[in-house]
Length: 164
Image (tube, rainbow, N blue to C red; front, side):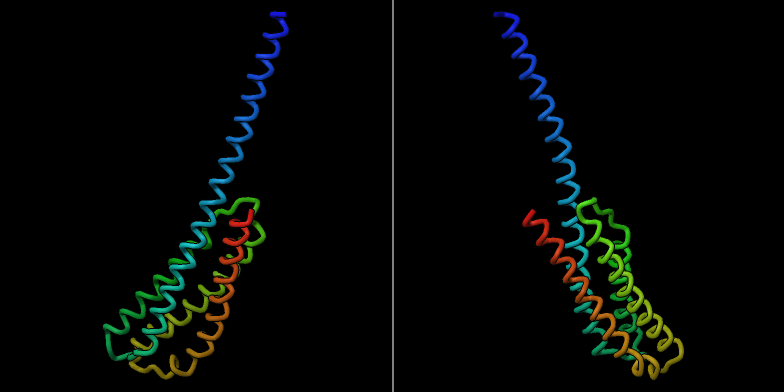
């Protein structure tokens, strides 16, 4: 009888240890997923804020006003840094497909913002904003398309995680 009780106790202890091991691994994955989703949300929210500021900077653009140029360049730098951070995010297996699309779109948005920045720098250096005024609408249209896709993918990631 004692042998049966001892065996039963050992089996219960082993089952408990195995259960904790599985739960611990699952919790680690859960935390990584949660951190990834939180990072995506934060960075995309930052891009929303900076995009609003970029619109304001564009409305008051004057290539002869160094303060306005400085403000514009600071906003483009903030956007560039945000999109570069998105490129370095590490996703878990659960988010691999969405992460590939997120990074593709953020890379395209990064390209458009970099082009706008270069045109602003050129306008400042040359003292003429003719190229900027002529080309900016095309770059902004493309940027806003990628920006909306970025927001949509972020929303998909958050919704997926919330429903998981």
